[in-house]
Length: 283
Figure 1 (cartoon, one colour):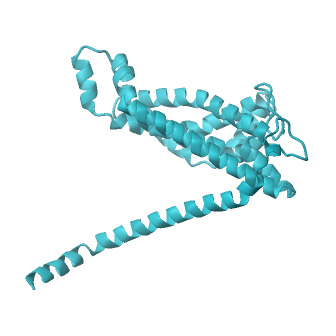
Figure 2 (cartoon, one colour):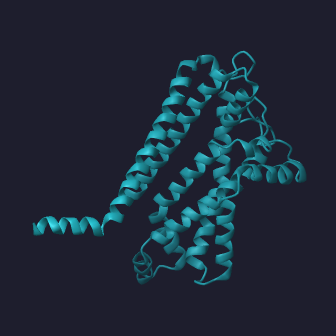
Figure 3 (cartoon, helix red, strand yellow):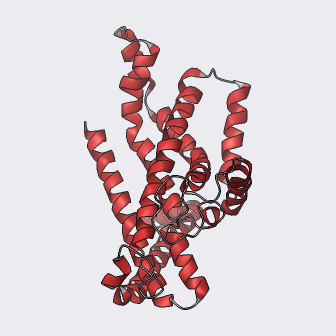
């Protein structure tokens, strides 16, 4: 009896914890269910419509090939990362390693990045249109889309890199200083390599946002169906290609097939990035 009374008392005291744990489990199950349902629906609707004609080099109204869009997607993704990652990483290094604690400039920068992270992509698209397409005269081009997406993912990379740098133990820095290393060497030889897995996590999130972006690219990169031959050429990405097929209403099946390819691309990129992060963290 005393043991049973103790169990009842424990249950009463921790009833709130049990409710929270139950809600967490339900949320996890709901998330997994939505993910499986979404992926399953895309595969069921898209896989039967995958044909070799969708991967021909040139686009026309008969094959509605997605190959030019795939190439444009990879090009814009690579260029956007080349612009955003160095700026994001070095900005985070300054905020964590060099800016003094309580610095008002740091507070302003952090508030700005958090604000920019919540801005809808259509706003970035309108800004890119007015700034790069109209003001700078780049017209609808890969370069205009690249710069717009780089600005869009910059706050994300900054914040994730900042948190990754903060997670590096101070003992690493103190040990490096104790061995006679300077500030710059400590940052680039000790701190940054230790924070690489966290930095890559931000890069993966940025890639996902780039590959799935539509609104910002319609106003900047354009919807030309061919492969972009230069930075100032217009070209559509996979997400824009899928949107265009659905909006026309004539190629719904091909749009589902495009969604399958887009999903596979995201999975492969994320898997490769995670593999790189694991190898770096082991070293």
